[in-house]
Image (tube, rainbow, N blue to C red; front, side):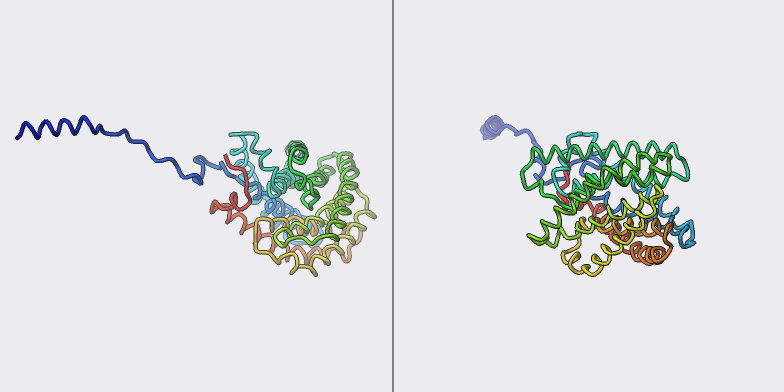
Length: 347
């Protein structure tokens, strides 16, 4: 009997060999391993707004005798945040350079990457009082980066579906955004560059305004996309700021009054703009508000009232609004949800 049991046991071992262990495959939606593989471009619009806000407080120190340390403190903190954001995005891009082309295929990606290089141009303006050579390097690098992003966007329009070519306010960021470099250019000793940027981007902005108005007359904008309409204010403000930096007082004042009119319309339409739920696209509110404050202080150099007062009042409200929006977007990013919410490319 014992021999029979041993024989049976032996036969059982032979007929049922132990199967090798294969670990189960990862779930299809598992996040990729590695740091910053899904950094969303949507982090950059609020950073652009925060840098503009810091520059506005720096100008408020001249126009309204506001404490100088406020602007410098904001600019110092936000510059570090921006550098961190650039490192985080480059950590994704260096793994696969084509991921940048993937990001520009979607609206939040186009807006975010264009805002990212635009923020670099504002960083150059922030660096002017400390190091003009460094400001020049940052400015040139940012303009080159912006040109690359614009080229990738045009390429995506050519090879992508026709609906992707519809004119949106984000076109201002992508194709008119070079004018942001005109803020720092005169201060670093390159007024001719600022003049060139002003002359080339003004007609493009005018065409975008016209086409957008015709599109708006035919069809309403869905609530989730309405915050993007605020971007239309940004070129108005930037043209006035650059004109003031070049000494064109009449032009700066004219854009100042135009900016006041556009801002008045935006304030009266605030409920229309904010009808949808909060999303990362609310970052589009931040940099136009900051640019408007800078426009008021720039125009105030040639006509003190009412621009200085309007700029001071708007800057207080804008500081609160920009800070809240930026905090919420950064919070969503920190929770790891911003990439999925904006459909950012992941590697």
